[in-house]
Image (cartoon, rainbow, N blue to C red):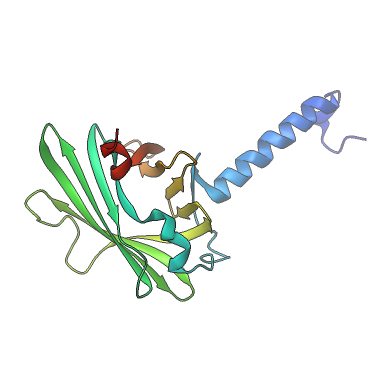
Length: 186
């Protein structure tokens, strides 16, 4: 009955649990960067999408991040793109900025960003940007490679970023940002 000797005498329930655990690990290795981020399936390519699919991201968002407070601002979709800005403030001083675009190209989306110190000196070389290809999009959620944005029912924006640590392990940073207009009305 058992093809593998090590399974002989093992209960059906334990075999089922082992199979589920193994299938979850295989799915995570293929699709998950961290619990809330995804990696693209190289064979499938990027998901089809239009820049209009991300209209819900438009606005000015703020909240705690990286031990400080961040601002993230997204323009309305126009001309097959959105532009964004990010600023991290700690102890009353700007730590760094990001200039960001989401561009519709080849019937999909790609996020491109560049980092800048507070004095506007760039982190990346002049002709280089950090690129996040689209993995999946839904009406209130977008998964780029290692970066997820989710608009919550309460109007907040949840952001998940996977980052490789010095140890080589992938860790997930989570931010919950509030719309600035909503915060100011409190």
